Length: 367
Ligand SMILES: *Cc1c(COP(=O)(O)O)cnc(C)c1O
Figure 1 (tube, rainbow, N blue to C red):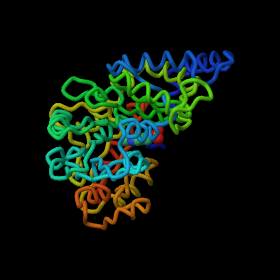
Figure 2: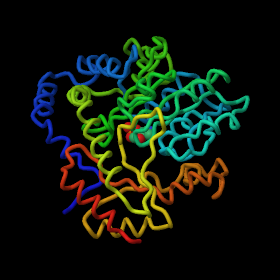
Figure 3: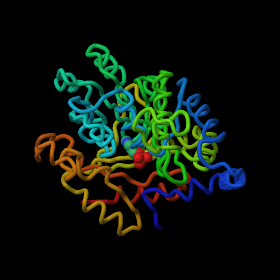
Figure 4: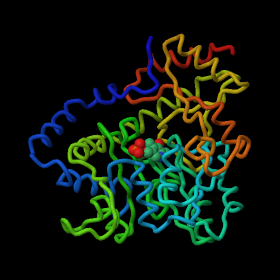
């Protein structure tokens, strides 16, 4: 059997006729940028997440950096983020000239909220809460800390579309919720796409101006903006995806439940879910103990099973962030995670046989 870590064709096949009909409709409409599909998707996405406004953008990274831009956070400011974040989270901060300040993750692979306060200085302006792998952060603690220290909160929901913390959808806690619709994400487009959600009309308006060269009225430019327009084709296709979000999230939860009940190997630590959190299981991330990760990757590869490491180099050690001056050992928990995490196959349309094959292979691994 040959099993890829993610298989986008399977998800496409589940509703192929609907995507194809929508694509043709948009192609034949003669209108391709900022039209009725984008407007409709923004309304539907805001409603799905449970916020007043959504603004469609070109990517998740744009959602992040534009969030700090519209909040007026830049040079001289500090933003708190987990040390095991995806690099885009950190770039969203640093592209504005602000300084990322890292906080170690806890055993749930998300920011350890108990370690945030010790990192707050008089320059701290915001917390970026990344709901990594699909699991919600402890938004109760994060919001309380933000309130006490008068900080903005931006939520990175790029891996956590429609997920909940204590019954409330992520992206509705902070000032702004950011989404990526990169094809492999929980709600994936057929190319690059992103969006923000907010209840703040003024902020929503700023995103609309920034995404279109800083322009509200054609050829009148209020600010130095960018080109980050969601296109009609992606918006239309995302509207189809959105109709099936409950089904996608439920299916991945079922696959995760099987993994959690049936994978039994002393070398493998299964993902842990924080009480109060749900997960959309964007990834099913195991921790492989005793330095056996590379051996497990090789072994699974030999059986036709592909895996991915999310992420092998923590941002503070990446070449891009050498200028921050960190060294190996500065964030030992995040560095330890980088050496032991492994994402095993997880995708919509994964068959029961494929799941059984992955489970049996991992259970038979002896190190
Ligand atoms: C994918 C992702 C992003 C970036 O989104 P793009 O659409 O690829 O720019 C940001 N943060 C997280 C957590 C992501 O998973």
